[in-house]
Amino acid sequence: MKEIPRGTLHKSIDLGDLELVLYRAYDENTQDEWIKHWNKLYDLRYFASMPDLYKAFKEVKQEQRDYLRQALIASYSKYDKPMIITSTRIRHSPLSLDAEITHNIGSEREKRKRTEVPVYSSEGIIKVLEEPKGLKFLQALFDTEDNAKTILDVFMNIFVKYQHCKISISTMPAIDGKRAMELERVVGFRYDRRECDVLAECYLKAEGQTFPVVEKPGHLKL
Image (tube, rainbow, N blue to C red):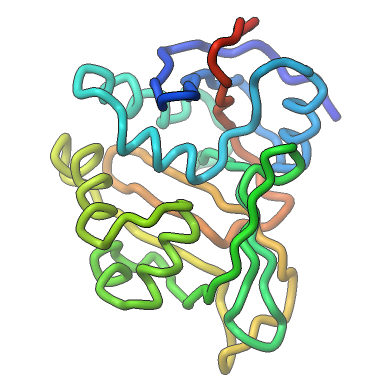
């Protein structure tokens, strides 16, 4: 694995017993590479999952929202559409739309949930939340019991009320209710002021930047 260089520390978001550190390394790596990177540090930091991001969106204070949005926009990328790689991975069943979602994969904090993963291709979040199966999927993806209104409000308050922004959900395609190839997928997140995309369909080789989460109390070394 190539050495991951130092990056930029913006702020940290208080999540109660945790902090999401808005630290962006000037490099892009696969999920497996990021797992190795954070695990080898042996400190209080770990690789942020999709639930960690959702919790940050929900609990960030008003005065910190600009910092959060700025940190989500990659300052450097070799891709036209850079993204955040999370430590959430989905392993799909080959015979149905069922899947196992693993948060904080490769760490002591691994947490697994089984759920149906409907097929969505850049589907608007409102339509996804209107469907019972869509709500159940997002609850598993964000590891929350929040209802549809609360989930929508979380995204609206951070992204849409600041600047009109399309919020969409994408999942792995299927044919006749079955998924056949590359059944393991990484969950990514992309925001560029105009679009906010929850990408539950990324290949394992997909590269992106990431955030660490730190347990409190702890000493963060950058």
